[in-house]
Length: 522
Image (tube, rainbow, N blue to C red; front, side, top):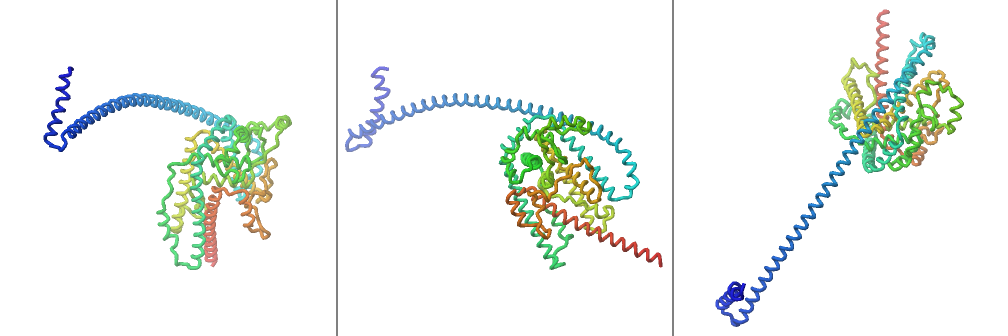
């Protein structure tokens, strides 16, 4: 563009407009007004050019940011896809490993069943003559029938224990290590569940105190309070807890804690947290003890418990004594057996109280005489069905978590049931004046256990509350066990009630029979 063209196109219009503005404004100092107007036009042009430069710079930066963001998004997408593929691969690998482990579990159970059948056939042939000799005298003896039922229960519990224990002979210690690390990693969830159990224990303790006070008031003001028939509809309105999401970390914590009670004779204070439990669980030692554990007899850590030993009768004798030089480990103490049984009740019922009293054992279930008895029979049947359903849900949760957790839970339950059945059988033998078989190892006397708070008695034979409190401060309190004790007290009160009803009805029947005899004689 030439100078004349530039003046006409750019400078000329500006000067003309400035001159026109000056003429219209008629300022006192036209030269100053004219100069200020030109300065204003120049500043406006500079601002316009700066804004255009900023727009260009911003657009350049935006394009650079968009290019970098697209690259970051691509890298993030690649990373997410890579981790998703890894997760899918690990998930498929874990599922395959779980399926293989479950197949091992089923094979182990099947192998144990075959060995038990062979062992049962052998024992049946050996005991055939003894049964013939004792059959005539025992048929009419009720105590003998109870003893026979207890012995049968022991055999069934023993078979179930050996089925669950067989799997432990086929696994590696790495599975225990995985569960241990998971327990530590999920300790916050366990802590939350522990807080819930603490709240439930406080509520149950408060309910027990209020119930005792209500009973005292009811005795003092008989007839002023509503009876059970009036309060039953209110009780039904209480919402039952739903067990939709059972905590697998809490199952893991309780199972490992119970095994610490059985294997290490731990106190509640020593296994109060997931970290303390994990510190006790050394995978190699823990696996050895699981393989050799016997709930009803002493065992050696280096000698796995096998059904073949029972079938073969341990014919090698001295060679085994030379091979296993470690000291034998005593069977679990009675207090630990009771503690594990109580914790299992809380575990398998998922913290919900369900009465274990079977009302049908005390009254005629086919012909209840009162409405209260009919409702009690229905409630007892409903509680039994609900307990079975919740137990199945807990086992299913453990099974979905891992085969190893399910196997530990199953072995723990069968070991506890085996120990309880054996103790009941021995108790019936002692009460009936029978001799305990020579090969049966009796449980330790609870009076000789310094950590058994239930054995502390004063000079009058009553519970020494002060000594119990001192001991509990030393060894700690298991919250699950304390909750189960409250449940047991409720069961005992209900049992005493129905026993009294059964006894009163028996007396009435005897009196009725006596009256009929007198009438017939007259």
